[in-house]
View 1 (cartoon, rainbow, N blue to C red):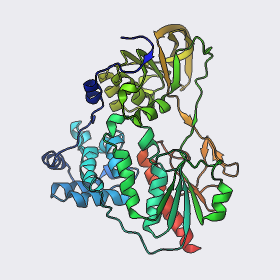
View 2 (tube, helix red, strand yellow):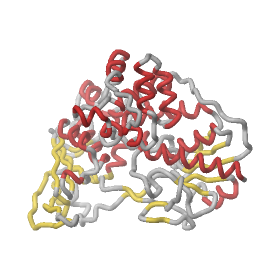
View 3 (cartoon, rainbow, N blue to C red):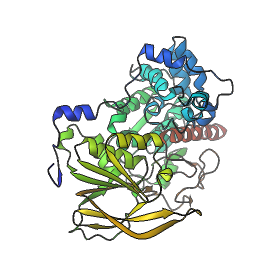
Length: 439
C-alpha cells in the first residue's frame, strides 16, 4: 500500500509463487494423452500456420509412440529454438489456431505444450545432437545474438562455416533473454538453450560489440565472406506528449523494465509503483503490466488507444492479464501526465480505420508509467536500404548491399515473433551457404 515506487512490496514466498512457471510442463502421461488427440492430418493446416514449418503431426505421432527424442529432432531440424518457441509462441494465433480440433471442438491439440515436452528432454540434457559439416574455410559475421542471429549461426556452423556473432548486450539470447516475461521461461531456460545451441561448435560469441561502435559493416565485409544482420530494434518510440519532469510520475520504457526484471537475482529489490499505468497494446505491454502486478503493484492499468480487437497482444494474453488483476482500458490515449496521474482522452475507431480523438477525458492515478508503444530501427549503416522503417530485403533476407543478409525484427516482412525470426535466420543461412558454395 506504500505510495510511490518502492521495492519489497511482497513476502519472499509471494514473489516465488507469483513468478513460478505459468504453464508447467506436461509429464509423460499427460503428453501421451494430449498426443492421442491429434488426427495426424495428411494435409495438416498446423504445418502451414507454423512460420518454421515444423512437421507437427509427425512429432506428435513420435510422442504418442513413446519416442520423444525423435520428436525433438523433428522439431529442432526445422526450429533450433523449439524449446523457447514451445513456451512463448502465440500458438492460439498460429498452429493451434489452425488445428482441426479447434474448428470441430473449440479446443485444439496442445501443440505448444507437446513441443516443449519433446524438446526439453534434449535441450536440458546438455548433449547437442547436431554435428558440424566438414570445414569450408569460409567465415561469416553475424550481428545480433538473438533468435534470428543464433538460428543463422547454428545452420551455418552445421554446414562447416566458421561464425563469429557480435552482440551489443553482455549476454546472448536477444529478446529471449531480455524481453519476455519471467514466468514464461523460468530457471534460466533462455540461457540454457543458448548454451546448448552453441554445443555444435564453430560459433564464437563477442559480447558488448555494437554495430557502428566496436564494429562497422565495412570492417565486417572486409574481414568476412558474408554478413548477417539480426540486431533487432534498438530504438524506442517516444510517448509524444508534453510532461514536465518535475510533475511526472516515474516513467520508463517497458522493455527496459522487463529486461531489468529478467536479469534480477532478487525480485524483492526491484521497485514498482503502487498505481501503475502501461501505455500500449502489444505483448510487451501485457508482459510489463502482469509483472508489475506480480511485483506487488496494487492497481495496474493498460491504456490502449484503439479497440480491444485491435490490440497486438493475443486474446490469450489479454485474458491472462485480466486474470492477473490488470485492468484493460481501450480507446483511451494519453494526452498528459500530471502530478500523480495520467490523463487519458477517449477515442473512437472509425469505419475507415482512422482514429477519432474525442474531448472526453479521464484521469487515472499513477506513480509509475511504463511505455510499450513499439520499438524502431536504430544504428543501421547508411549503405543498407531501409523500407517502412526496417531493413529492406528480397528473397531469403538479401539486403541492398552485396554479401549482406538480414532477418528478424530488424528486417522487413516479419511479424516480430521469435518463431518468425528463427525461420528468417535459418533461411538466410541456407542462402548464404549457397552463395559461399558458388563462390
